[in-house]
Image 1 (tube, one colour):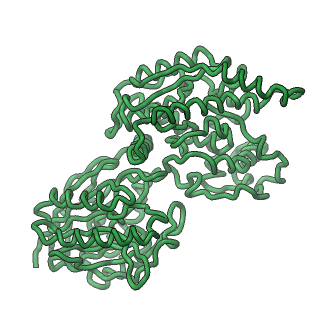
Image 2 (tube, one colour):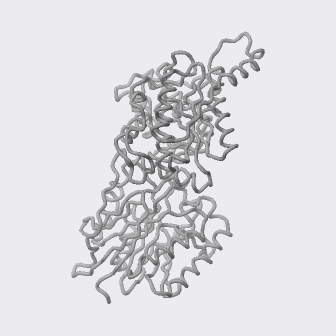
Length: 567
């Protein structure tokens, strides 16, 4: 029985549904791992994660099964055994599984026992849970293979240890959330390792998939709780780890210990990688976005350049008669700093045309939101025309603070294919913009130096849809609004609980009312990367029509009058 093992961790990106492409990546990584005893791939790597209802298509499962057999045959050639995540049907039930491929065959299969059914996860509707697993045998060593959620509760690891496991190898598809690194290591993996006295290798995937992004950041914890290996976040890596059997059991030798991105760099990297994979995998040549001269659109342009390169980003300023010279100057300065294509398309004639067309119907009424929002809808139509004509994806730029309270124009500035800021509050946007002006992200393609004009940080936010308009005309200041939303959205607190934290009751009740009224808008918003534990859509699923208000009576304000516009 050997007293050393070499286990390679393949922290890879994957494409949902691209079974041949994912399999090709498995074999390429296996070549890199020459000399190892085992190479490990992330959860459901062969089919891609998360597959959602695509996994229910029998033809996909059939193709995955055939490709798994092809990989198994490849394991007969020189090289390490492979531990591959896939979906398997056993006795008529679909399972989230890992397969050990060794010596030309499928040597063992283990099934996920704990199926998450919260937040972004709904695996209970897709898979059947497997029994408590027993260890696999590899080169005479008992390997316990808990799958992702299996380590978030103690039962699976205790069961594996009781049945003789000597090493845990946990394969994961763990999406990024703010502050999740510490939770994974300190709150979960270290507890399982120390409780059982067994080392644990934690392998996570990296890359974007629709609204989720995976940060990698794989690691190894020894049985004493010490960190032996830490892979980088936000990048693919294929890293060999070395293991030695001592009188006390197996230990992973000290290997690379990368420093993970800290706040707010982690948020910025999440946005960059998610946008990059979304645009590239959906076949867009690049992106187009409106540059208003404000902080949100400038930040989105910087994210796009870091994700795709300046040559694939097109910024468009669409001034109306309310657009200030400051906004014109700031948008142009931002475009120059980023090195992107920049166009100016005045919208005055189009807005005048709509005013004339609607004049007879609107006669006798006062100008208001309907007329203001025409500007935003003209801009959305113009940008979509550019997208249709030339192919770039239209990127929207509204932040989570605005989307929370409906401060956005449906079919106007909400029109588009993807929104990097969808789960970022306004104060977060300021923080990541400040950071980007001083740093270049490790995974970024953009230039060094300040990219966002300083005036964008200091001038009052405005949609510029009427003379002297300010966001604060309709909303509390963002440094007040964001903490209120943090309570109402992220923590589901009542009005009473938020007021107890020192906020004005009338203000909190007003924000809660806007939050509920805007749900119908959010249902029609483009996707955007998940950053928090309560992003709109996947995590926070509220009914559009409901009568509950924690702060008082239901408002009689109809949905159609709720909210204003933001650019």
